[in-house]
Amino acid sequence: MTVVVTGATGFVGSAVVRSLLKRGETVRVMARAGSDRRNLEGLDIEVVEADLLAPQSLAALVADAGGLYHLAADYRLWSRRPDEIYQANLEGTRNLIRAAADAGVKRIVYTSSVATLGINRDGTPADEETPSSLEDMIGHYKRSKYLAEEAVKELITESGLPIVIVNPSTPIGPRDVKPTPTGRMIVEAAAGRMPAFVDTGLNVVHVDDVAEGHLLAYDAGKVGERYILGGTNMTLAEILQGIARLTGGRAPRVKLPHGLVMPIAAASEAWSRLRPNGTPFVTLEGVRMARKRMFFSSAKAISDLGYRFRPWEEALADAVDWFKRGGYLR
Image 1 (spheres, helix red, strand yellow):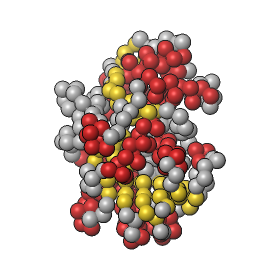
Image 2 (spheres, rainbow, N blue to C red; image 1 turned 45 degrees about the vertical axis):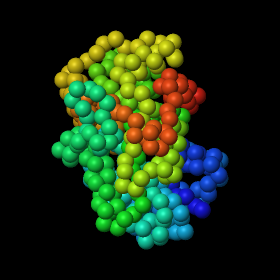
Image 3 (cartoon, rainbow, N blue to C red; image 1 turned 30 degrees about the horizontal axis):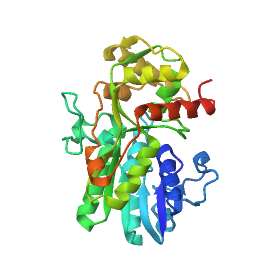
């Protein structure tokens, strides 16, 4: 049976591909023309060039496939054209799932995000049932993922499509080639280029554990249910201290108030707009998100799927080591 993976050139997607190959699956992946395929080098896979926004290209991708893992997403906290984020994450998801339905795909795992979930005001970990609404979503990325997850739920209800939803938290580890916003933070801290920080919290998990969680959701997840694939809840200060221990450096001690960082983020975005390929290091959306500690519980995935995650120290060590060997810390 052929299993299709979208987003396979990316951080989490490539980890899912490796987990599937380790299990002996026949894997077909989607890649856009001209995409960075370093994460796929040396893997025994079939590559099909397709585009989520070109529905006619998706038929060949899902033809004769038994299963589908949809991980492709536009994960940016800033864009000159926010409509691109909605097109990829919302319309692209609709196009792919409809193509999979037409092809008779028997099982689908849709990768959402904890960004779509609510946050408990008292700081306790949120779960799959914590209420959230579109009005709670900060920025275009979170709004687009929320709308996409709602669209997936509607498709399940309308057509009975066999879709299981997973909500990864903050993956870290090897092969973060871009890197992701969290990966960029690790790089800057490990290189000693982060003089200060803001008070926030994240749920940190090894990317390979998230990948295994996808396979568990495929095997044992209930159609229409969603499962948080997370790890350890940590403050940013704790993460930076862990990085300092790994590198022999010193964690930043200056904690900046969010109100002070907002004008810095605004200036960073303004400066990026003046450059052809500029990307702000600090974004308004990121600072607004940092006002809340994004703590989550994976209890449901643990009890229902048999999901497990390794200690955060190992996840962080693997991330720092990979960035170091890749020359990111220069």
